[in-house]
Every structure is written in C-alpha cells, then in structure tokens.
Amino acid sequence: MNSPFRVNILTTFPEMFGSFFSSSILGRAQEQRLIDIQITDIRPYSLSKHHNTDDYPFGGGAGMVMMAQPILDAVAAVSAEYPSARRIYMGPRGKKLTTSLARELSREKELILLCGHYEGVDQRALDTCMDEEISIGDYILTGGEPAAMVLVDCVSRFIPGVLGSADSPEEESFSDGLLEYPQYTRPRELNGMEVPEVLLNGDHAKIRAWRRYQSLKATLLHRPDLLETAPLDEKDLKLLDEIRKEMNQICSSEN
Image (cartoon, rainbow, N blue to C red):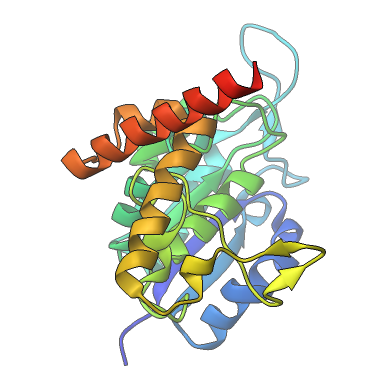
C-alpha cells in the first residue's frame, strides 16, 4: 500500500480543525489512509514562562506579532518527522492558490503549513524556515487556520482515490480554466421544470458537447475574465461566438 499524503499544520488554535477534517470526504480519506493530517500546537514550544506565542511589534503599531522562537522550534521538531516537506506559510502576501497550484502541491509527499495570527509573524521565522507563502484570496482573515483548511481541502481532491473517481476533479469548476456546466439529478421533472433532454438520451458525445457549450456559456456570463487564460481551441472559440450571438439576440428581443 502506498504511503498517505502527509500534512502537518502548525497553529496556536488546534481546536479549530477537529470537525472539519473528521467529516465528509476528508474524514473518509483519512480512514482509508489516503491522507494523514496532523495538527501541531505551537504554544508548547514557547520558552516563555506562560508559553506566550505573540508580543508587541517593534516600531509600534496596533495588535500583536507572532514570535519567531516558538515557530522556529516547532518547525524544527516537525521537520524531523517530515524531512521532505514543502513548508508553506498561509499569508496574504503569497501567490494565490489556484487549481494548477493545488494540483502541483498534491504531487508532494508531505506539506507543513504555518498558520499566522494577529498582525502577522516575525519575519525572521518566515525567512528561516518557510519555503514559500500562499494566499487563498484578496481579503482579510482573522488567522491562517481557515486558509489552511481551504488549501488542504483543495489539494486533497487531486490525491488519487480521495474522490472515488479519477475524473471527478477534472470535471469541476476551474479544472480546465472554465466554470462547470449545470448539474441535474432525480426527479426528471419538478414543479414544471425538466432536465435537459440531451442528458437523458445516453449519447455521450452529445452530452460532452452540451456540457462544453454550457461551461463556456457560464464562464462568459459569470467570469468572462477566465476566458483570457483558459486553454481554448478553435472549436471553443466558434462556440463562444455562437453564444455571444445568442445572447445578443435575446437582449435585442427583450428591448
């Protein structure tokens, strides 16, 4: 049996992770030994009398800053057990988490994630023991713990066996740079609304074509910016022209 994908999360709030990682897909993945997620409390590594992990910032300013010493010692201890780990600080200055980055991270054997808190982390800790910084978006969180959860959830979907189907992560929104097509399930008719006939006829070629068309349409309507970087072929471009003409006709008829 292959070794599980291993993640160790360093935090001052370990209690935040329990239910998130023990539920649903991530819970099953751990039971099946596909993923091994460990949480390390930074506080016991503090050498201060009361195991403090933060202090006032030099130069003044509001809030507190996480101290370097507890982090350095915690990372050193964890790294001894995770010698090949890619060490990541979950912070706002990092490169943004994307599908391609998540896929890349899933190819690693081990990850160590550091969760910042308060007004940030002493830069000396980041310079000394972190390989990189990753952000999950351009907004402010109270700490790095939610960001770590998002990263692990996102990356885990590319671990073989976690979703049960090798195709699943490649068919979802953003996997190919586009939004996902609409999904339907039973019943076939509900309150006068019916499932598109093409999904019921068993013609897989037509179903794939319909889904591609709908994916392009959803992206054009809701996230047109994604079309600038999505890998589109000539057929996709022709479909987009058809969709634009269709949308213009609808607008004209409404006016």
